[in-house]
Length: 244
Length: 333
Image (cartoon, rainbow over all chains, first blue to last red; front, side, top):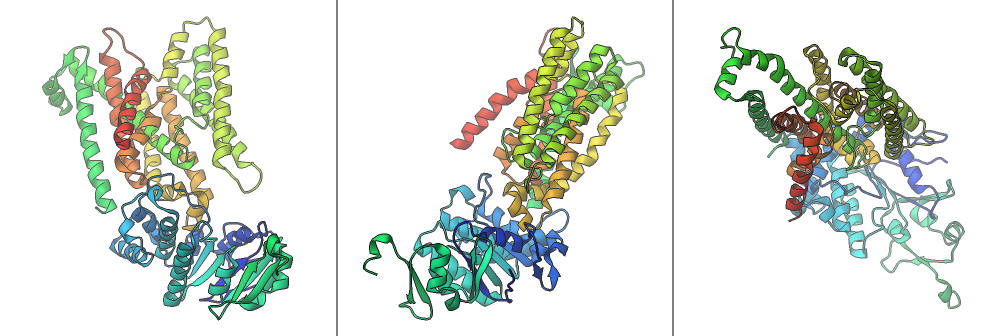
């Protein structure tokens, strides 16, 4: 497969379960080696980067987060400064300032002293995004950040990412199961199936009825969203097939 | 409070406690407690041929120093392994150190070697052999799970179980008067230290420094290895370095003191309950706290029985377990 993402782009990777979306994201993050081929960031092979330097450029919001140890929200967010710290790893005033701004941006500043395990799913996700922002990256990778959230919280997370991208020019690469979120927020999409790229391109071109039906293996309705400017994808349950 | 200040304050406070407890331990003995005389002797103002001075310089002070090093190292070892394996039940012996070193020590005793250097060298070698085996086993696991927590844990537990069987076999086969010595060694015994062994203790000091520098990466490792990598940590190298450094210092200590139990398990938990999960704070705290705790336990092991002394390992658990339960309940409330 071959594709490239431009600076400042909102790029969404979609595809059915087991398509290899998360693996692809890990390869892009340099956490896994590609079986073949190379990932290049700023004209330099990702494997040539030192882990620390890579983390100064790129932040990752993982699918699952460990909350077993009783770190507070403030502890967790400031950890995002790690790749920028000296050998003893002591944060300075500037680091606390950056963490404070990040927490305000994702609306978790009021939770600063709470423990991670006391948070709701939406709050926890915003803390992890604050940590990623605190890393001051040029690229943020997100692995299904909205899967466990209700619609309002899904939109809150997505709006946050969109706002951050607009203000900072950050590149966003996101894996998502939600085709409508992909449609509304993505600039360009990549449709993955069984480890192969089925199609990559403008949102409207990838969210094609036939392509989606073939890839996901169910009937789909694709039409203009009533909100305009985006397509709407509706998977069709069996009991509605006859009316369709 | 900024973390730097917090570290300095905590370290100062715990150092003060350590010094006070040390002086008490040096002052106390079968001949009663005499602070004034002890302080005078420690300050170098003693009359020549003073018997108490000889006891303090030749016996009690080395003993207190050994207890401090053993307690500090074991507590720190437990802290590192609990973070590395992300398992609250991890203790410094978990990777097979106890089993390997015990077999070595028992063999040396049965052959009739002296405590130093014979038993020390045998137990250190045994420990390293088992460690190497467990690490290589975990390192050659298929896939990208190199040195995964589970393979390390299972390898260590299995090796310890196997070694325990060998130990029981050795003990049951022997009619030697050494059995008492073996049992004391297995429970941890600070009475066998000889002054020539003291310089060996200095070997663990660089380990402390390295672990303190790696305290922040350890914080990140608690969040999972991938998350740590995503935040700039070279996970494989850090995990390997921590494993080797910690195992080495624990092996050195065990070869001098036998298997002092419970300090390495309970001290890290106590400080985590008191201070939270930040390792930059926990590393110096466990070091000083572990040292203080073992000096105190050793003092009790010396003065409680009307004659002779108890193995210190008995006291560590007798006090440590209830103390930990009280803290746990208090934290719940």
